[in-house]
Image 1 (cartoon, rainbow, N blue to C red):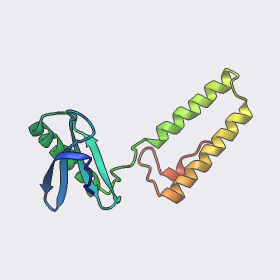
Image 2 (cartoon, rainbow, N blue to C red):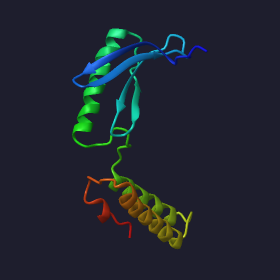
Image 3 (cartoon, one colour):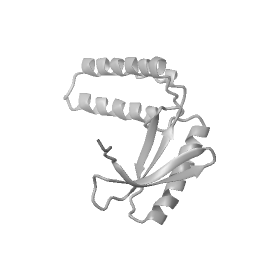
Length: 145
């Protein structure tokens, strides 16, 4: 039985000892170009649409993407992780809770319990996922109380 391929026009892009590739998806008529690169540390592929149908432009965009990905890897950052400023999220949530209490949508005791649960979640993230917090202080120092 013949193997069905999901990519067409695959072109590898060597960069030192690392390889990336541009390709078009076989399941989409007149597909734009995509870039993929295997991330050994994360044991998965990084994939992104290059949003162009021109091969030469796709190759140039892929090189730029590859440099950004390698720069993140070099500094020890996770390429696939969602980058969020935790402190700003916590402050926004605090403000949201206060607004809900003022408008009588929730009680003060509910606000207190939600703050407690968020604190427990922060502690879980710190111990289980070993996330690093780089904003206004250490991740462990973030308090909702």
